[in-house]
Image 1 (cartoon, rainbow, N blue to C red):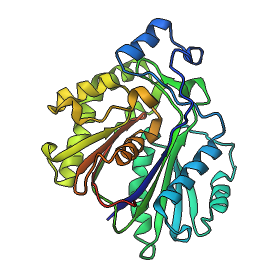
Image 2 (tube, rainbow, N blue to C red; image 1 turned 90 degrees about the vertical axis):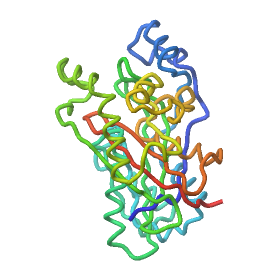
Image 3 (cartoon, one colour; image 1 turned 180 degrees about the horizontal axis):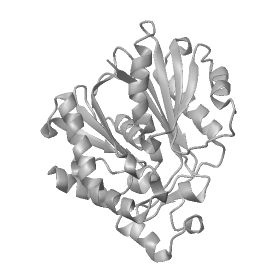
Image 4 (cartoon, rainbow, N blue to C red; image 1 turned 180 degrees about the vertical axis):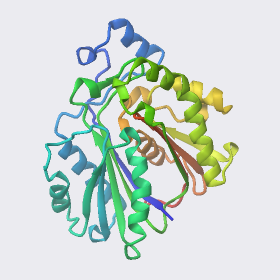
Amino acid sequence: MLFLTAVADLVPDHRPTLFELAERYPMSGAELTVMHRVFGLDRVPVWESGIEDLLESTVRRLLDRSGIDPSVVRWLVFAHTSTQAVPAGDALLVRICRRLGLNRAQSFGMTTNNCASAMSAMGVVERLLATEAPGDTAIVVTGDVAFTQELRSIAGTTIIGDAAAACLYAAEGPGHRVLGFVQQVYGQHSACIWQDEEHNAEFQAEYVPRVVAVMQAALDDAGVEWGQLRQVLPHNINQFSWRLVAERAGVPYDLIHLDQVPRTAHCLGADVFLNLAQGEAEERFREGDRLMLVTVGLGAVFAATVIEYGKVPS
């Protein structure tokens, strides 16, 4: 069993409009206008320091918010979308552990599933914690800085922002109990943004049905029905595609939390946890609420998790 016991987010205060950042994107003015008016994108958070500072600041915020004793953290997992975040062999995570007093923590990174890597990590830490002593915990931090043109946008789909989120997991409560998790992989799209026209056409045509299919599968795995969901916390790819998902699933559009799309753009793997953190900060959830987290990693990995909202640190 797995519990998400605390979450912390870090979104830069510096958030220019996508038009102010136009030179970063290989798009015309008309294409940017579509991104804004049709897809609902507006502000783009920009982190002006390095990835190490972003991750350390986010994990520190999680430790402060949760009040957890650093000595019970046995694992620090960095789930990222950018394939190469630091030079090969760099001991980034070891340095973070030392500075934050995570002296018993072992650390490693995950990136294979791109934006779905942070959700995939939930299954990994569940298995790791099953071998640890009662009370031991794991932290998964996900964050990226869009430092290349390829990372800053997905053609015809979204604009990428910089942000991070850190989650504290335990094998027992209190916290948000993970009720169900499903991950569906379509390996024919492994070339990601570099796939050929035939595979790209398939990905675009099947995207909405596949999102709905993984959501339904996660509900089935959790033993929960659509009508029992308090809210869907999605990746903030754009508002237009989620409207299509809502129509396909036959659920109200406002069931899907999309408030942050114009505020943060698509912050890769951090999105669903940014939305959870915002909901907590605004006290929108109550104990016992069923929430669904949904994301898609290019490659292509469709993933959904259902949690039962529990007690959180005050």
